[in-house]
Length: 116
Image (cartoon, rainbow, N blue to C red):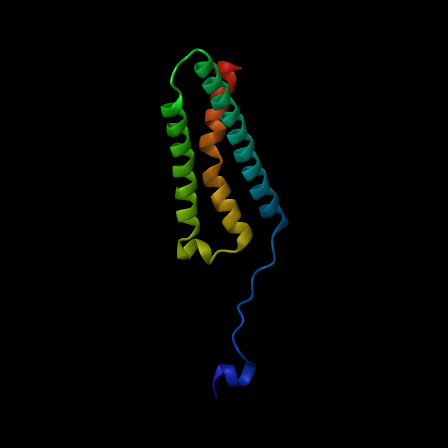
């Protein structure tokens, strides 16, 4: 007798979402997104001022776009690693949020203090 004959096909059980982990992941992702919006606003304003002054801003904007695309690519690559994909969805969101949050939050905080 095999397991499948006795009990039917194996269906993995996902653990129930833990509210504290879900809330913490949402807070981390919220901080990361608000920081990225602030940084995008500052980049846009700096580019607008530079363009109004007659400077070339294409290279600066391309550099900023490549930086964001590289970070998104690194997070996507990490999210597709088999060990991370096997994690519970709430724990995976917390892990990726914890990795996505610090860099833009620190940069936005520094620019907030320095530039206002």
